[in-house]
Image (cartoon, rainbow, N blue to C red; front, side):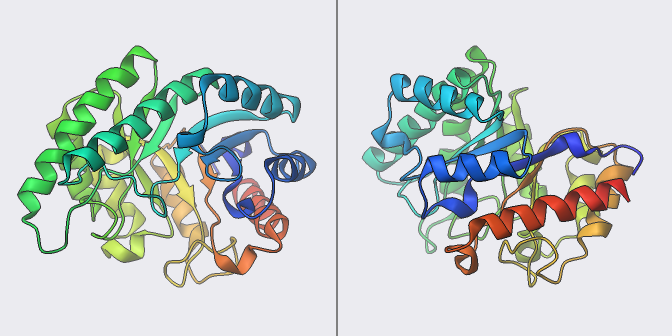
Length: 279
């Protein structure tokens, strides 16, 4: 490919969530990973249960395995984290989780956090949910700027976020109006929003607002290991290459199929993506 390089690939601890962090880091080092998306989940590094001292220890562990953190992603789907929650206490607690995540990212010398914009009850007016989300994101973006950290937002179904497609993501980015808030494209989530990757890139100002890409296979969704789903991932990578995308291609492989053999899922995906890029 003309623009994409193997150096952009990020391995991750996503599929290792039923194993220890030490097992995950050993595995990722063994397969030759260099960049890491740090999935902050129990038992690896739960944001609620961790301190800056814990982050310092984590930094040393990661460095000792030859890895560099490129994105810090707190667990925010299975845990009750929702910055657009109607209940003030739940919203405040969720914002605190993201504030700690920003601090932890900075401690890890990482300049990107991946957040969801929050959601409301499915029978609630969309406008009220949207306003709570935008207010929280502007507040968090100002804090993140002080730490030299960017925030990247992702689309998902309405039960997870008010940003259910890329045009809504762009609208939120423009309304928040902070220069450190960007978008993510997730290859295994595009099916939910019924978008092509080309449409998503175009919606994000021809990729100028695109800060991170999650790469996973799907049927059409599902975050399968690369090559084990039905997506035209080679075509998607060609579209990113055409757009001159220069940030990380992060392997978000997170499916119950791989609970007992996460190394297979991550190594298979890592090798598939390297081959795709190199031709």
